[in-house]
Structure formats: C-alpha cells, structure tokens
Length: 91
Image 1 (cartoon, helix red, strand yellow):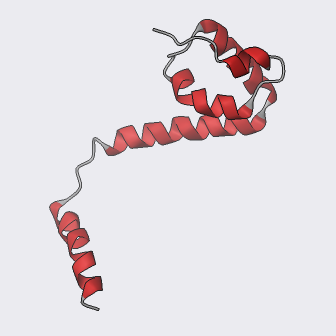
Image 2 (image 1 turned 180 degrees about the vertical axis):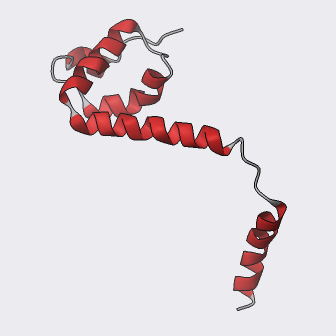
C-alpha cells in the first residue's frame, strides 16, 4: 500500500526538499508511495541535478547488490579472508 504524502513534501512541494527526497528515494524507486508524492518527487527531480545524481547512484547501487547475490564467492577466497585476522594478529 502506498504511503501518504510526507509533511515536508506537502509544505515545500513547489521548491522540493532534497533531504526528504533522500529519505524517500527507496520508496520512490520501489513505487511504494502515493501517486501524489511520486509527482512531487518528479517535479523536484526536474529541477535538482544533485537529487537526480543521488537517485541514479542509488538505482545503480541496488542493481549491483542484486547482481552480487547471484555470484558465489569461491571457497578459496573465503579461506584467505578468514586467515587475514590471524595473520595480522601474529605479525
């Protein structure tokens, strides 16, 4: 169920609010907000290059993390990583 319009977007819909957009970015990407709030975010994104870059970075990061889960870490690498703390402790 989409979430209600955030008070910060309601009060600053014309100018947008970068901090509020950052808080709601995941919900925006997952379409987990109301159509009204999506429209306010879209309007803000039309004017704010910083938020556009932030949203694109978040979208890319999410995609990369999803891709990582499909790749198994080789056992040999896991073994080497497990040995690092022991090697550092022994100098």
